[in-house]
Length: 217
View 1 (cartoon, rainbow, N blue to C red):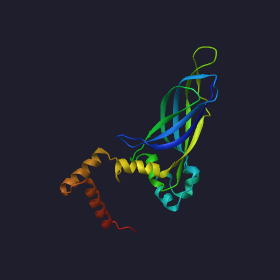
View 2: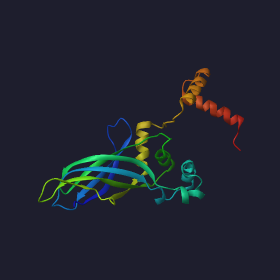
View 3: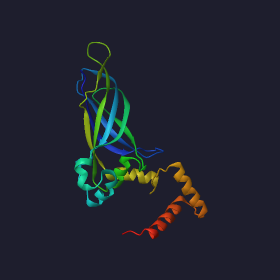
View 4: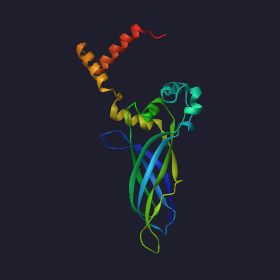
């Protein structure tokens, strides 16, 4: 049976991409040289291992919306699935490095966005879980297919700043806020009736009114 090992060796922004994305360089090594690898179909799930790092009080406050109060984190601090993706690896011998491209988003409906925005420095521990099929040819015999072993995985520590710099490059200090259509229509009517130029000004006006009527305690 063929035996492949997987290692994440680097992470970097995807150049010339229209949308923000990170590329993780994955090294795949054939540990049974007498089996000629003809192709590999790799399925990969990337998980953020939230419990494998410490959090400052400021980070804990920003992550309350995701994990509840820190006193409950023993129950709520669970891995977050970032993405399920797949890629095809062509024939190789020895080892090969292939990129896993992962889109990044400032949509705050997503748990991954809330998490990356909530942590301020250091690294984010990631686990890459692999499955799929290996197409190989033994030293004697024809083409055969074998599954990637269920226990194949790799760990990587992604610097928080790598995600933040990608988002800043593409989004320039902006975020994505998803609204129901009827709520957006009400906001648009308020903006027009108040003679405001941007939606940002409309929201700021509404926040100022709300703060006057309900001042913080």
